[in-house]
Image 1: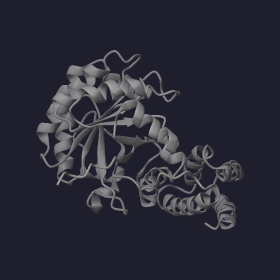
Image 2: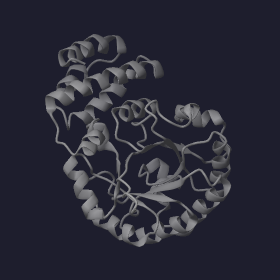
Image 3: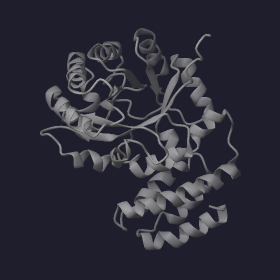
Length: 325
Protein backbone atom coordinates (compact mmCIF):
# COMPACT_ATOMS: atom_id res chain seq x y z
CA UNK A 1 0.00 0.00 0.00
CA UNK A 2 1.24 3.52 -0.72
CA UNK A 3 2.34 5.43 2.35
CA UNK A 4 0.14 8.21 3.67
CA UNK A 5 1.37 11.75 2.93
CA UNK A 6 3.16 13.46 5.80
CA UNK A 7 0.84 16.13 7.22
CA UNK A 8 2.13 19.70 7.16
CA UNK A 9 3.86 20.75 10.34
CA UNK A 10 3.48 23.88 12.46
CA UNK A 11 6.41 25.14 14.52
CA UNK A 12 6.37 27.82 17.21
CA UNK A 13 9.13 30.32 16.53
CA UNK A 14 11.88 31.48 18.87
CA UNK A 15 11.08 35.08 19.87
CA UNK A 16 13.66 36.83 21.99
CA UNK A 17 12.15 38.63 24.96
CA UNK A 18 8.69 37.28 24.21
CA UNK A 19 8.27 33.51 23.85
CA UNK A 20 9.90 32.23 27.02
CA UNK A 21 9.09 28.95 28.74
CA UNK A 22 5.90 30.39 30.29
CA UNK A 23 4.41 31.53 26.99
CA UNK A 24 5.62 28.35 25.26
CA UNK A 25 3.76 26.34 27.88
CA UNK A 26 0.53 28.28 27.48
CA UNK A 27 0.59 28.31 23.67
CA UNK A 28 1.53 24.66 23.19
CA UNK A 29 -1.18 23.51 25.60
CA UNK A 30 -3.69 25.19 23.29
CA UNK A 31 -2.55 22.60 20.73
CA UNK A 32 -1.41 22.40 17.15
CA UNK A 33 2.39 22.60 17.31
CA UNK A 34 4.80 19.87 16.23
CA UNK A 35 7.79 21.45 17.98
CA UNK A 36 9.05 24.78 19.21
CA UNK A 37 12.35 26.60 19.62
CA UNK A 38 13.73 28.50 22.62
CA UNK A 39 15.00 32.02 22.71
CA UNK A 40 18.66 31.99 21.73
CA UNK A 41 21.50 31.04 24.03
CA UNK A 42 24.34 33.40 23.19
CA UNK A 43 27.67 31.61 22.90
CA UNK A 44 30.52 34.09 22.80
CA UNK A 45 33.41 33.33 25.13
CA UNK A 46 33.18 30.19 27.19
CA UNK A 47 31.68 26.79 27.80
CA UNK A 48 28.37 27.49 29.46
CA UNK A 49 27.18 25.48 32.47
CA UNK A 50 24.10 23.29 32.15
CA UNK A 51 22.23 25.82 34.28
CA UNK A 52 22.49 28.35 31.44
CA UNK A 53 20.51 26.00 29.24
CA UNK A 54 17.97 24.82 31.81
CA UNK A 55 17.32 28.46 32.74
CA UNK A 56 16.26 29.33 29.21
CA UNK A 57 14.66 25.91 28.67
CA UNK A 58 13.34 24.36 31.89
CA UNK A 59 11.76 21.83 29.55
CA UNK A 60 15.15 20.09 29.48
CA UNK A 61 14.22 18.79 32.92
CA UNK A 62 11.03 17.30 31.43
CA UNK A 63 12.53 15.23 28.60
CA UNK A 64 12.88 18.43 26.54
CA UNK A 65 9.11 18.83 26.22
CA UNK A 66 6.52 21.33 27.35
CA UNK A 67 3.78 20.16 29.71
CA UNK A 68 1.67 19.49 26.61
CA UNK A 69 4.38 17.13 25.31
CA UNK A 70 5.62 19.45 22.55
CA UNK A 71 9.36 18.95 21.84
CA UNK A 72 11.57 21.98 22.50
CA UNK A 73 14.75 22.62 20.51
CA UNK A 74 17.55 24.77 21.95
CA UNK A 75 18.70 27.69 19.81
CA UNK A 76 22.34 28.79 19.74
CA UNK A 77 23.64 32.16 18.55
CA UNK A 78 27.31 32.84 17.88
CA UNK A 79 30.03 32.94 15.25
CA UNK A 80 32.84 30.72 16.59
CA UNK A 81 32.40 27.20 15.15
CA UNK A 82 34.53 25.46 17.76
CA UNK A 83 32.95 27.24 20.71
CA UNK A 84 29.45 26.59 19.39
CA UNK A 85 30.34 22.93 18.87
CA UNK A 86 31.76 22.57 22.38
CA UNK A 87 28.59 24.04 23.89
CA UNK A 88 26.41 21.88 21.66
CA UNK A 89 28.26 18.77 22.80
CA UNK A 90 27.82 19.91 26.40
CA UNK A 91 24.07 20.50 26.12
CA UNK A 92 23.70 17.22 24.22
CA UNK A 93 24.27 15.50 27.58
CA UNK A 94 20.85 16.87 28.60
CA UNK A 95 19.21 15.14 25.61
CA UNK A 96 17.57 18.15 23.95
CA UNK A 97 14.89 17.52 21.35
CA UNK A 98 17.13 19.32 18.88
CA UNK A 99 19.67 22.10 18.41
CA UNK A 100 18.93 25.11 16.21
CA UNK A 101 21.40 27.70 14.88
CA UNK A 102 20.38 31.35 14.75
CA UNK A 103 21.28 33.28 11.59
CA UNK A 104 18.19 35.43 11.68
CA UNK A 105 18.34 37.83 14.64
CA UNK A 106 18.33 41.42 13.26
CA UNK A 107 19.05 43.18 16.57
CA UNK A 108 21.82 45.80 16.10
CA UNK A 109 23.65 44.92 19.32
CA UNK A 110 23.77 41.24 18.37
CA UNK A 111 24.77 42.03 14.80
CA UNK A 112 27.60 44.35 15.87
CA UNK A 113 29.06 41.40 17.74
CA UNK A 114 28.86 39.14 14.67
CA UNK A 115 25.78 37.23 15.66
CA UNK A 116 22.50 36.33 13.99
CA UNK A 117 21.75 37.81 10.57
CA UNK A 118 25.10 39.64 10.46
CA UNK A 119 26.73 36.40 9.24
CA UNK A 120 24.63 36.17 6.07
CA UNK A 121 27.45 37.59 3.92
CA UNK A 122 29.66 34.67 4.99
CA UNK A 123 28.22 31.41 3.64
CA UNK A 124 31.55 29.65 4.10
CA UNK A 125 31.41 30.43 7.82
CA UNK A 126 27.81 29.23 8.00
CA UNK A 127 28.86 25.91 6.50
CA UNK A 128 31.78 25.59 8.89
CA UNK A 129 29.58 26.32 11.91
CA UNK A 130 26.97 23.78 10.84
CA UNK A 131 29.54 21.10 10.03
CA UNK A 132 31.48 21.59 13.27
CA UNK A 133 28.36 21.49 15.42
CA UNK A 134 26.98 18.49 13.53
CA UNK A 135 30.18 16.55 14.12
CA UNK A 136 30.11 17.37 17.84
CA UNK A 137 26.64 16.05 18.68
CA UNK A 138 25.08 12.57 18.50
CA UNK A 139 23.36 11.68 15.26
CA UNK A 140 20.01 11.23 16.96
CA UNK A 141 19.82 14.92 17.91
CA UNK A 142 18.37 16.96 15.03
CA UNK A 143 20.39 19.98 13.90
CA UNK A 144 18.40 22.75 12.25
CA UNK A 145 18.95 26.42 11.43
CA UNK A 146 16.97 29.59 10.96
CA UNK A 147 18.11 32.31 8.58
CA UNK A 148 16.85 35.49 6.97
CA UNK A 149 17.19 36.19 3.27
CA UNK A 150 20.27 38.36 3.63
CA UNK A 151 21.53 41.57 5.17
CA UNK A 152 20.33 44.31 2.80
CA UNK A 153 19.23 42.21 -0.18
CA UNK A 154 18.55 38.59 -1.13
CA UNK A 155 21.49 38.08 -3.51
CA UNK A 156 23.29 35.56 -1.26
CA UNK A 157 20.24 33.78 0.14
CA UNK A 158 20.72 30.67 -1.98
CA UNK A 159 24.44 30.57 -1.21
CA UNK A 160 23.72 30.66 2.52
CA UNK A 161 21.00 28.04 2.31
CA UNK A 162 23.18 25.69 0.27
CA UNK A 163 26.06 26.21 2.69
CA UNK A 164 23.94 25.24 5.68
CA UNK A 165 22.64 22.17 3.87
CA UNK A 166 26.20 21.18 2.96
CA UNK A 167 27.18 21.65 6.59
CA UNK A 168 24.74 18.96 7.64
CA UNK A 169 21.63 20.67 8.97
CA UNK A 170 18.51 18.58 8.54
CA UNK A 171 15.90 21.34 8.18
CA UNK A 172 16.06 25.03 7.41
CA UNK A 173 13.63 27.73 8.55
CA UNK A 174 13.68 30.81 6.33
CA UNK A 175 12.30 34.08 7.65
CA UNK A 176 11.17 35.84 4.47
CA UNK A 177 12.87 39.16 5.18
CA UNK A 178 16.38 40.60 5.15
CA UNK A 179 18.09 41.95 8.24
CA UNK A 180 17.40 45.51 7.14
CA UNK A 181 13.73 44.69 6.53
CA UNK A 182 13.35 44.13 10.26
CA UNK A 183 9.72 43.13 10.76
CA UNK A 184 8.22 45.48 8.18
CA UNK A 185 5.64 43.99 5.82
CA UNK A 186 5.40 42.63 3.27
CA UNK A 187 7.43 39.47 3.69
CA UNK A 188 9.33 38.23 0.62
CA UNK A 189 7.66 34.86 0.26
CA UNK A 190 8.75 34.36 -3.36
CA UNK A 191 12.41 34.43 -2.35
CA UNK A 192 11.75 31.50 -0.03
CA UNK A 193 10.26 29.59 -2.97
CA UNK A 194 13.65 29.68 -4.74
CA UNK A 195 15.33 28.15 -1.68
CA UNK A 196 12.63 25.53 -1.27
CA UNK A 197 13.01 24.52 -4.93
CA UNK A 198 16.80 24.20 -4.61
CA UNK A 199 17.44 22.39 -1.33
CA UNK A 200 16.93 18.67 -0.74
CA UNK A 201 16.21 19.09 2.97
CA UNK A 202 12.86 20.40 4.26
CA UNK A 203 12.49 24.17 4.11
CA UNK A 204 10.10 25.77 6.59
CA UNK A 205 8.52 29.11 5.70
CA UNK A 206 8.28 31.92 8.24
CA UNK A 207 7.13 35.51 8.18
CA UNK A 208 3.90 37.54 8.25
CA UNK A 209 1.46 34.75 9.05
CA UNK A 210 -1.27 36.28 11.20
CA UNK A 211 -4.39 34.47 9.98
CA UNK A 212 -5.64 31.23 8.44
CA UNK A 213 -5.68 33.00 5.07
CA UNK A 214 -2.02 34.03 5.51
CA UNK A 215 -1.11 30.41 6.29
CA UNK A 216 -2.60 29.17 3.02
CA UNK A 217 -1.02 32.07 1.12
CA UNK A 218 2.52 31.49 2.41
CA UNK A 219 2.35 27.79 1.60
CA UNK A 220 1.17 28.51 -1.92
CA UNK A 221 3.72 31.27 -2.53
CA UNK A 222 6.74 29.37 -1.14
CA UNK A 223 5.89 25.78 -2.01
CA UNK A 224 6.75 24.87 1.60
CA UNK A 225 4.58 22.31 3.34
CA UNK A 226 5.68 23.40 6.81
CA UNK A 227 5.26 26.81 8.43
CA UNK A 228 6.77 28.45 11.49
CA UNK A 229 4.47 30.82 13.38
CA UNK A 230 5.98 33.77 15.24
CA UNK A 231 4.28 37.00 16.26
CA UNK A 232 1.04 35.83 14.66
CA UNK A 233 0.88 32.99 17.18
CA UNK A 234 1.27 35.45 20.03
CA UNK A 235 -1.28 37.88 18.61
CA UNK A 236 -3.77 35.04 18.18
CA UNK A 237 -3.03 32.27 20.69
CA UNK A 238 -5.48 29.99 18.89
CA UNK A 239 -3.94 30.41 15.45
CA UNK A 240 -2.31 26.97 15.34
CA UNK A 241 -5.52 25.37 16.54
CA UNK A 242 -7.46 27.34 13.93
CA UNK A 243 -5.10 26.24 11.15
CA UNK A 244 -5.42 22.59 12.18
CA UNK A 245 -9.20 22.84 12.14
CA UNK A 246 -9.29 24.88 8.94
CA UNK A 247 -11.92 27.07 10.58
CA UNK A 248 -12.36 30.81 10.84
CA UNK A 249 -12.60 32.49 14.21
CA UNK A 250 -15.62 32.77 16.46
CA UNK A 251 -14.76 35.93 18.37
CA UNK A 252 -16.94 35.32 21.42
CA UNK A 253 -16.11 31.65 21.89
CA UNK A 254 -12.44 32.24 21.15
CA UNK A 255 -12.12 35.03 23.72
CA UNK A 256 -13.63 32.76 26.34
CA UNK A 257 -10.80 30.29 25.64
CA UNK A 258 -8.11 32.96 25.38
CA UNK A 259 -9.15 34.55 28.67
CA UNK A 260 -8.40 31.24 30.38
CA UNK A 261 -4.97 31.24 28.74
CA UNK A 262 -4.34 34.77 30.00
CA UNK A 263 -5.26 33.70 33.54
CA UNK A 264 -2.86 30.76 33.32
CA UNK A 265 -0.08 32.97 31.94
CA UNK A 266 -0.58 35.55 34.69
CA UNK A 267 -0.38 32.90 37.40
CA UNK A 268 2.81 31.43 35.98
CA UNK A 269 4.61 34.66 35.16
CA UNK A 270 4.17 35.91 38.73
CA UNK A 271 6.17 32.95 39.99
CA UNK A 272 8.98 33.67 37.52
CA UNK A 273 9.61 37.42 37.70
CA UNK A 274 9.41 40.20 40.28
CA UNK A 275 6.01 41.79 41.07
CA UNK A 276 7.23 44.97 39.40
CA UNK A 277 8.07 43.07 36.20
CA UNK A 278 5.03 40.83 35.74
CA UNK A 279 2.66 43.61 34.60
CA UNK A 280 5.03 44.46 31.76
CA UNK A 281 5.06 40.87 30.59
CA UNK A 282 1.27 40.72 30.58
CA UNK A 283 0.90 44.05 28.79
CA UNK A 284 3.47 42.97 26.21
CA UNK A 285 1.34 39.97 25.29
CA UNK A 286 -1.93 41.90 25.35
CA UNK A 287 -0.33 44.57 23.18
CA UNK A 288 0.12 42.03 20.40
CA UNK A 289 -3.29 40.43 21.01
CA UNK A 290 -4.98 43.79 20.38
CA UNK A 291 -4.49 43.03 16.69
CA UNK A 292 -6.77 39.98 16.91
CA UNK A 293 -9.21 40.61 19.75
CA UNK A 294 -11.12 43.82 20.63
CA UNK A 295 -11.44 42.45 24.17
CA UNK A 296 -7.63 42.37 24.45
CA UNK A 297 -7.50 46.02 23.46
CA UNK A 298 -10.02 46.90 26.16
CA UNK A 299 -8.08 44.92 28.77
CA UNK A 300 -4.75 46.40 27.67
CA UNK A 301 -6.12 49.93 28.07
CA UNK A 302 -7.47 49.09 31.53
CA UNK A 303 -4.04 47.83 32.63
CA UNK A 304 -1.78 50.22 30.75
CA UNK A 305 -1.07 52.62 33.62
CA UNK A 306 -0.79 49.96 36.34
CA UNK A 307 2.70 49.18 37.56
CA UNK A 308 2.55 46.37 40.11
CA UNK A 309 1.05 42.90 40.28
CA UNK A 310 -1.04 43.99 43.26
CA UNK A 311 -2.65 46.72 41.13
CA UNK A 312 -3.09 44.54 38.08
CA UNK A 313 -4.65 41.54 39.75
CA UNK A 314 -8.14 42.85 40.69
CA UNK A 315 -8.61 44.64 37.36
CA UNK A 316 -7.53 41.57 35.44
CA UNK A 317 -9.76 39.26 37.44
CA UNK A 318 -12.82 41.47 36.80
CA UNK A 319 -12.21 41.38 33.05
CA UNK A 320 -11.59 37.65 32.99
CA UNK A 321 -14.67 36.95 35.10
CA UNK A 322 -16.75 38.94 32.62
CA UNK A 323 -15.36 36.78 29.82
CA UNK A 324 -15.97 33.57 31.73
CA UNK A 325 -12.23 32.99 32.00
